[in-house]
Image (cartoon, rainbow, N blue to C red; front, top):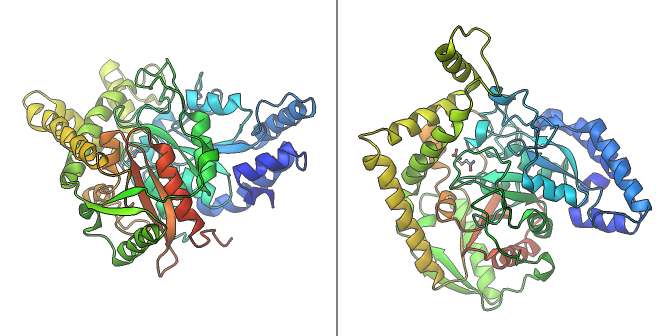
Length: 482
Ligand code: GLN
């Protein structure tokens, strides 16, 4: 069962010439054909293209010209990351037929290693949402319980990896869109430091918060994929010009002497089972030699309003480009320029996207700018300050990822404010630009996965991944049963 293997295992098998890339591709394609009808994790599946790319990879290997030890391994990519020649929809009617003429840098970095694309994954439209229910292509279902959501917005990227339809995947995280679905689907997901991975070619939602990150079934797979896509890119002015300074090979799970902060604010209002599980893990870490320190991140309660002002303001500006003129959906019934704009935008965008554009435009409008947007920016600085202080005392911060385990489809979709609240534990890391990950901590009594969040100071990915490595080594099996 090749489709069950991890990225690192597949690489080893290919290097030893025990399997071919075509065999891996065929196994994954069969798995996707057999299982994705129930999950809907892919918007676009690359069947034939994948097989021919795999053939080319096998030819490279047999002539000793492989591009890296990962040459020939297929991965899944969220459908807001541009892939040249392959439809990139953002799960929106607006981009339903958009075939990008260029690729995102993160995708090009995968390709430079010979890594192949097995498909583009489902998501909330324009990455706005926490359940993948806001997709024009229908919701993705949670592989652990198909009556439940996989989380969002990168629900398809998390569900495809959890259900063995890809070894690893790329996602994006603006307020929790990698970590929350990773937690709900029982996989590992990391949002790196802002600036670590190029955003060039990622369809912009809120540019000061968006980061591309990775999913895997193991910490090492997740870390390795992140290593491959990290690094400076002159095409993204916010990308940081420094060496990739974390190494997957260094992850050994040794956490002796690591000082871990536990912020009380993150343990209020969460489910009892999650609280118990995370507190249990913190005690385990202490038993293994970590130093546990209670801390306070006192501006946490303002994170939601700050985020929803800043993210919507940036979105209203970023989404202005979809006007029916240059690309994307154009309403067939428009009569003049203004009706072209109006109708194309009214018909092309879904409800949540429109809500965000209206909210953002309102808070940026004259007379309200100071009271809302500017105030939110000031609040953001207080949150950054909170973390700066905390990281002068601790190496990492551990919290739950979500207040509940995966909720039922339809349960929150009619109440946007309640849906927004589900980001309460993840969005501060985006506001502060720090790296944060979700690693499985076990399951609740209903068998649903629980995620543990580890946040680190800027560029401390290796530190948080190493703590995750320890948690993973001491965690029950999280695999789905089909
Ligand atoms: N759920 C959050 C939102 O709807 C975060 C989305 C994301 O990280 N892309 O904005």
